[in-house]
Image 1 (cartoon, rainbow, N blue to C red):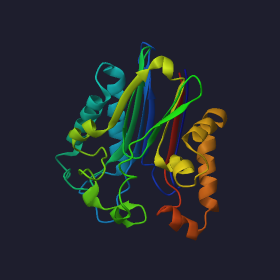
Image 2 (cartoon, rainbow, N blue to C red):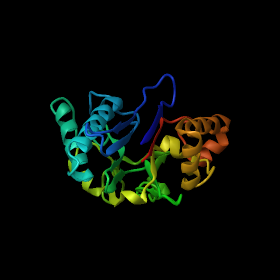
Image 3 (cartoon, rainbow, N blue to C red):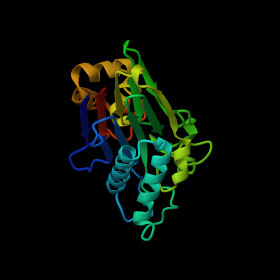
Image 4 (cartoon, rainbow, N blue to C red):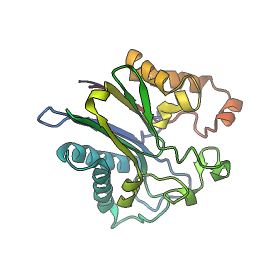
Length: 263
């Protein structure tokens, strides 16, 4: 097994709100990856004393431990337990019912000799490559399907659509959201490699239209995860103000994370 992980903040003056890990059990059989993209809150507060990086580190750490230590527990249950565990850490000091309480998108994949399981919640992406080179993207497209009226400004989404039916869902403080994630499983023999990306890295496909998800996977596999992040940064720097408006970006640079695993 070969793994590669790159995670870069959107700016030197900002903490990275992403989280990424690769977990391998002591037995050496199987493993998991976890990628979270913390949701940057707009001005106005979150009802929480803690930062988004605080939240993603604790949720990501719990999820990594649970996916490795409890291999027979479904990923949706592992996510629910991780959300509940994280909520307990600050329920006594923070308003976890606040619409902007710290939250994150989630990608989890877990592999064994028999299967590759996956879970995707919100707009990060998981890419699965078959032995014949076919790349299958696993996406939760509910955010992308929202009407233009859902945008308050640029890429800031109306808070009333967050974690609501008819809107989209993220991991926040309610464990029940885990049941709404996109989940599935494929035979291990049908997956040669996989990659998980936060939307900051996925801009290469979704914003700049440099290629499709298969092209993106090929770039990562051939040139490395760092090469994808570097290309996104170059495109962002070259982008003029008019095109940024067209692309719907309120941030010139976003945190960008890529995890690549060859099984």
